[in-house]
Amino acid sequence: MRHMLNPLDFSLEETDNLLELAADIEKDRSRYAHVCDGKKLATLFYEPSTRTRLSFESAMLNLGGSVLGFSSANSSSASKGESVSDTIRVISCYADICAMRHPKEGAPMVAASKSSIPVINAGDGGHQHPTQTLTDLMTIREYKKSFDGLKFCFIGDGNNMANSLIVGAVTMGMSCAIACPDDYKPDAEIMKWAEENGDFMCSSNILECAKDADVIYTDVWASMGQEEEKAEREKVFKNFQINDEVMSVAKNDAMVLHCLPAHREEEITAKVFEEHANEIFDEAENRLHAQKAVLVKLLG
Ligand code: CP
Ligand code: NVA
Image (cartoon, rainbow, N blue to C red; front, side, top):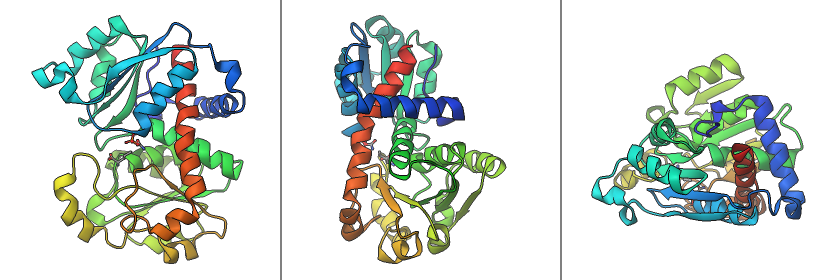
């Protein structure tokens, strides 16, 4: 039984196959309309979500399956102290696959160790967001046709998105530059892996990172669970913004991606956001196609 917990769980070849499958599903939706007939997806969301939960649910319904689940810890027995381990042992009796978002790093891995159904990490705190990254790779490939020779640049917090995107970009052979403040770097082990396995740099020099980039990506300055740090982070991240100056050093045809939700005039100006809204909302649409590929692959 396979889980999807960390982007590193999938080799280059497997990631490539998932991207092919996602693109095929997007092109020929009716061919996949019954591949999950009779299967049930449980969405176990201990944190808020619009895209991840609803794209998973829509994906399973489009594939012929059905969905059940909860959308906050408060509406589940987690609010009465039930552990992730006990929860997944119960859910394993009710569903065939589950997608879990949890504020604690590693919670989906704990679930997977007790589960008799595949577990998908739909975000585990500041650690990883692998399904968003799969979608991002799909969107880059859609627009740029190939990853060969591309430079990927992430500007902002060294958070869950940065961690997963480093793995995704390096796995697909893109050169990868992360621009972040010195005290907000991505996970040290992931950066070490990236240095050993690809063309990787992390610097607080935003323009150096963005220079000649083909893809510029950003995410919020304060992630879920960091609401109390918002004011302090606004000061630290003030310059870590996608704006006209950053776009002027990137390639002329550079694309801009954002996992959403976006805070205009913080991590990205409203002007750049609107100029690249087609790419950003295609990326959001691709959540649906990529989630279908993940469900089909893990349900085998
Ligand atoms: N991009 C993303 O994961 O969005 P949600 O938090 O709305 O799921
Ligand atoms: N870094 C953001 C990503 C949301 C999709 C967060 O964790 O809130």
